[in-house]
Figure 1 (spheres, one colour):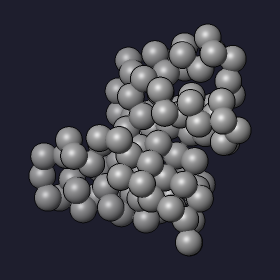
Figure 2 (tube, one colour; figure 1 turned 45 degrees about the vertical axis):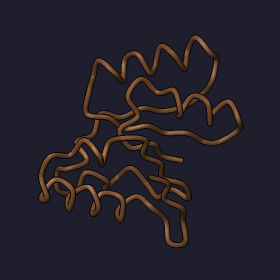
Figure 3 (tube, helix red, strand yellow; figure 1 turned 180 degrees about the vertical axis):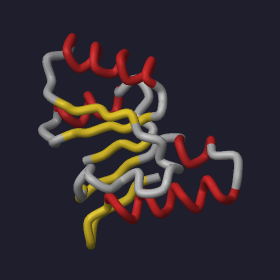
Figure 4 (tube, helix red, strand yellow; figure 1 turned 90 degrees about the vertical axis):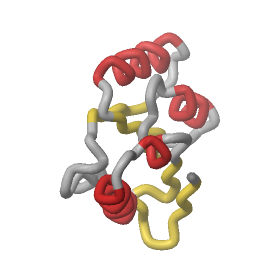
Length: 102
């Protein structure tokens, strides 16, 4: 699974604890450092990447995911062009037939 705009990683760590192969992306290096510390302190294996989901091709190379989640990233995007780029990102990372939960 991939959590878009994972912040400090609470959902990623929770789902990793439940047996998911869990990944999180966020634009904030500070949040990602906190997410990595959270995962380490809870002894779960998950992966975090710094990604600007509004950048062209941002999802290329991350792989395809059966589950993509977003608890607030899309809602924080302030422009129509950023929202369109976000949709392209999700299309790049969601595997065919996968589930997107916003």
